Length: 156
Picture (cartoon, rainbow, N blue to C red):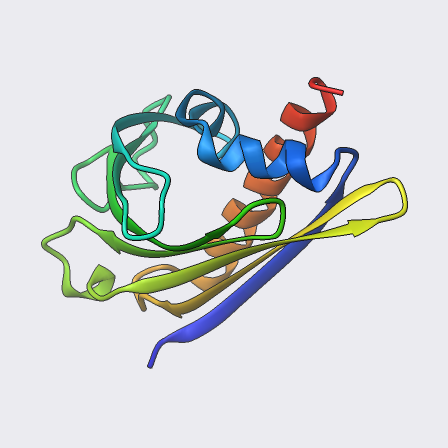
């Protein structure tokens, strides 16, 4: 079993607004990519058992950072395990890569909990591939949560 990484953030929006940002592909590509990346969704079926395929590409070349699928791109294949409106999104993610350090299935559980002033959004990533450095993953998760907070703030 791989390691487990966690992150959370309070956003100033209702759980319904946050949940909708997860199941709308146009919204997802706006907030999900960490700083320095852009996303493109090829397939997206937001239902239990539904699949998605997304590419995340670095928006500026950086020789110190390499994508998992190619020099500048990560390709993610995902399967929705559970979608509970306004409460939780559970998905299984695999990375397209020739490098065995990125192999395996990572389970991502996004939980939404109403709190004073908004929603606490928590993510738990289980079985994180060993090729993803803990500090890089922490920075990426934090950046994604910051993006989500800004995205939903503009909706309210």
